[in-house]
Image 1 (cartoon, rainbow, N blue to C red):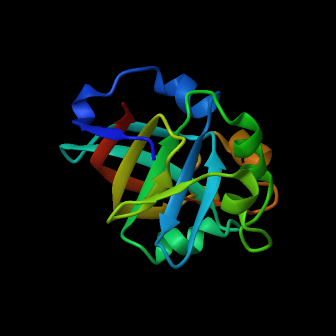
Image 2 (tube, rainbow, N blue to C red):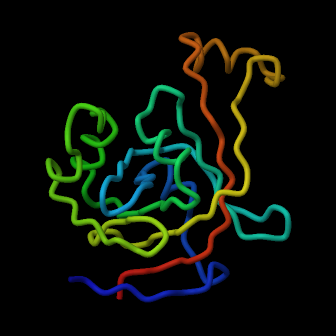
Length: 169
């Protein structure tokens, strides 16, 4: 099994605009008995409430939302632009209908808080701090609701404290 090294979140480097939007990430929650993952290309990383945090967005229709609701921790796995075929599969298929982990050959690593994947280059283990559903009346730029929410499949935003960051040795 590949080895990971824990680093302080303050030691993270790299362009997270590229990592999230172009290389994508997997949001994963659950445990050994049952977990689910989904591809995301929206989100962020920063400081809030004097904590190192991530901002993750999951639509109401996504199966992964159930796992986020029922667990205190989740992970964000980054693959450095590798495995785009596998990440595309995880973004286009629901865990309700298929075992995405088995189908893609991803190898889960079961951390004590939340699962991530052996093939990842960087993993952020996050503890949920806050959740809110985006709503039409909160948007100042109404063109965004027309463009991204015409079907009313709203995102829930999760703010998660980064409790652990690991990188591939």
